[in-house]
Image (cartoon, one colour):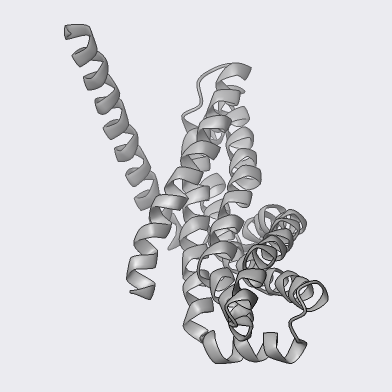
Length: 256
């Protein structure tokens, strides 16, 4: 019994300690953003973390839109509601599927890359070398990645909205017998600008989560190759969990 309580207490204290470190990292990152970070570093990270993620995001969302239409179109047709299919697909993409799946896919690719890169620098003492040269690791490593993720995730979500809706359109018109005008007019009737804007807001938060968790895990990596591997895995898992949690509360705020 004592051992069980000791285990629970140790893990609880460790979790609270990690939360405190993450919050301090967030505050320090915001502080250094106000000190004019180098634009060149931010652009490089935007290309690496954002543009390079576009193909896998589009491929994922394309088939998501297609399979969602396959699953829903026939049911709508059965009850005579085929004129609502386009609007339902567009709203689902804009509000939930595009931002959440983009965040999850990006967490798997970008979050792992950030943690592995910074973790390797930590293990090989490159971060200590930066401090010796009077270069703040937060301003040099964390800020460009944070800004790049916050800016690029909404852009990826926009492309995801478009390609997901196109995938739904192709399946609806080519395989489900729904007319092109019916599908597009349904989007015009049911979808609103707020459906897309809410997804972009979610994308900004998800990008911040991916960057902060990835950098935190990288900066606190245990020594050795095994430590880098564990930190990378933990970064991806924690980012995805936080994305789903954050998505719930953002949905309550944005769409209630």
